[in-house]
Image (cartoon, rainbow, N blue to C red; front, side, top):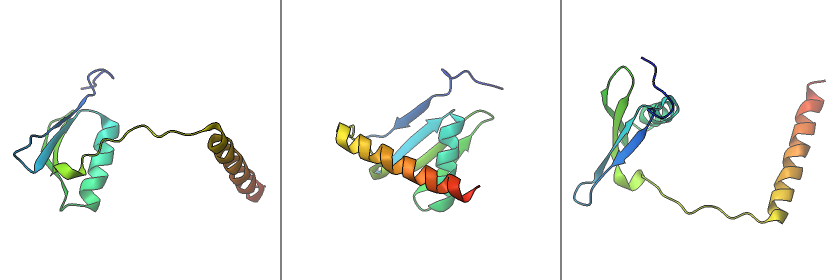
Length: 96
């Protein structure tokens, strides 16, 4: 069964009384990320349920992280752009 992009949702659920968070996802991209975390850190991330199109994971709620957007000034953006161009030139020079 193939889901539309709209149906490929991710829901994170936790409350103040419990230490665990529940993560339901039908997004293949999010499933790959969470599967990798569950494989690398089985003491923190677990698959607790799955259907043919979705999976439910459990993790400690302190691992859920919400951050403010990062501010970048134009000077830093220009520096990063030049650095990436230099890296690409170096990489491409080795392929010739």
